[in-house]
Amino acid sequence: MSRLIVVSNRVASITEGKSSAGGLVVGVLDALREMGGIWLGWNGEIETEPVQLPITHSDKNIDFVTVALTQREYDQYYRGFSNGVLWPTFHYRIDLSRYIRRDYTGYRAVNRRFAQLLTSSVKSDDIIWVHDYHLIPFGQACRGLGIKNKIGFFLHIPFPSPSVLRTIPSHRELVESMCAYDLVGFQTQGDVQAFIDYATRYLDATLNGNTLKMGERSIKVGAYPIGIQPDQIKELSKESRYSKPLDALKEGLQHRKLIVSVDRLDYSKGLVERFDAFECLLEGSPQHRGKVTLVQIAPPSRQDVQGYRQIRRQLESTAGRINGKWTELSWTPIRYMNRSYERTLLMSFFRVSQVGLVTPLRDGMNLVAKEYVASQPANDPGVLVLSEFAGAAAEMQQGALMVNPYDVQGMADGLDRALNMPLEERKQRYEHMMGVLKKNNLSVWRDRFLNDLSP
Ligand code: GDG
Image 1 (cartoon, helix red, strand yellow):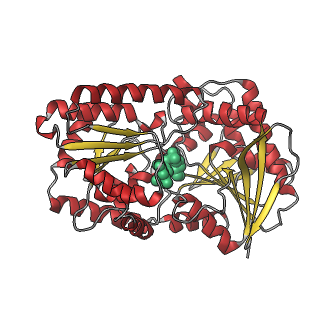
Image 2 (cartoon, protein in one colour; image 1 turned 90 degrees about the horizontal axis):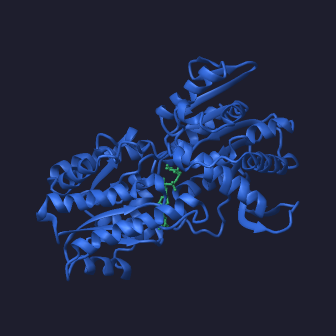
Image 3 (tube, rainbow, N blue to C red; image 1 turned 30 degrees about the horizontal axis):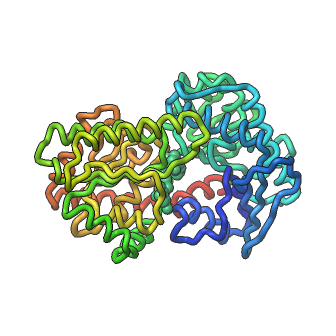
């Protein structure tokens, strides 16, 4: 049987307990355990001297091969090009993209460096699975080193329409490099279509079924919506039911209704618009004043990238303004927390809430939307209010209340409807979404991708 080689920007530490690790990590680790293999990537450290040798440690049948980045590699590959150009552009925020040619050069160089790390350990029938936007040219770098194995690439974030993509000066080289893969997977059919549009229009590729032909090369493309492990999440959501933090949350609520939101603090997640929508609800529907609380958990991320500091300040001032205006002696409308919580606790917060509010301006998938639903009690489920621009919308639109995150009034109306939704309708919507989550779970995602890569 073939071994699996997983390549991603960050390699999860094996000390991460199963309950604290996110779904994706668990899914990839399970596949690696089953097939045996290697997980390769950055260890999260920055070294002052270029380090030549990777650090390898093994756990059962998995070798973890990790390297530190130099400060310059970090600045150019990670902070500069990946998070300063690709992330904003692929989320349609070209206003936040800062293209610097040497960052792009550094990005390619780190991709080559990672590929070189593989050359000594790759065996001829290994299957290579590359993850996400940090590593778009990794496959091409492998081909340049003579690696002929099956290599698949999965993009976790949206693939933008060609007119947006073309704002990145090196767009052509970037997408051409994706054609070194045997399979390129996206979260939604919309992303697949955007990729095909670009390849057929600007790279003279032709499409035959689900295969793009470009000169000598054939690339399979497809939508592989990432899933979760709904049964495990349900269990997690019950685990913390007698914990102190959950008690504290309930005590603070004093039987008020709870709307809960959880996102990395990122400008793509639509947090400001969401706070505005909550205020709009208070303004337009006085019956909710003093009766409902929005808990927003937003652990900071990428604080050394410009756009992230900006959104943090903007959110602080928006939350401060709204709370300043509406807070009463016994009620604070928005509880805004810049910190992370244990996974089990998050799921228990979901479970005791009446509404899960997930309103990104753009999102590849959004696993929080799926985790929210899986955490609900079947006999009294909360309502998911979901942005039509989350990848999850493609699968969940029949069960969730769909909103446009650019329409503040529309989101307020959605919240009002969710807070007043009768039990029967909530149950129907929940059952529908649970059906989808069980059918497209995390192992289905992984197995479909790996089977298509190496039938
Ligand atoms: C990218 C794409 C795509 C959040 N806060 C805490 C915490 N989380 C967990 C959530 C969830 C995960 O982090 C976030 O996943 P998302 O999918 O919502 O968003 P991104 O981080 O932007 O992920 C996205 C995903 O890749 C997978 O393909 O869906 O579109 O952008 O699992 O629960 N976990 C803990 N504490 C927190 O405070 N423990």
